[in-house]
Image (cartoon, rainbow, N blue to C red; front, side):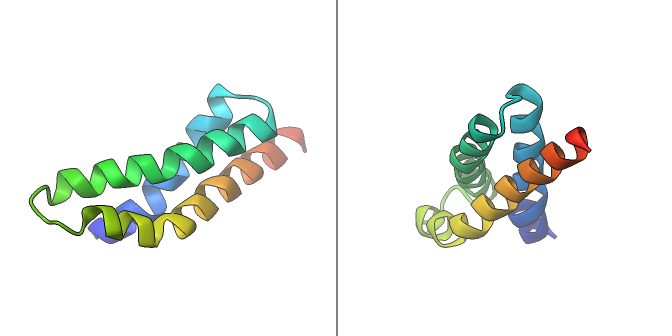
Length: 82
């Protein structure tokens, strides 16, 4: 359950927050692409702070996390303009 939250729910929330705070699609997608891996890294660090693989785990899942966050921004943008 924790993996589902970290890999899909958090990046989706980052994408929605980016779109809500920044109305331009380029700025919102850039903020989502930068913010999502940072949020995931922080979350992994809070879940298991003594594990030495936290940075590697965040690095390995970051492409998926970035993709989910940016796709969320695009879907929110499309929904708001149609």
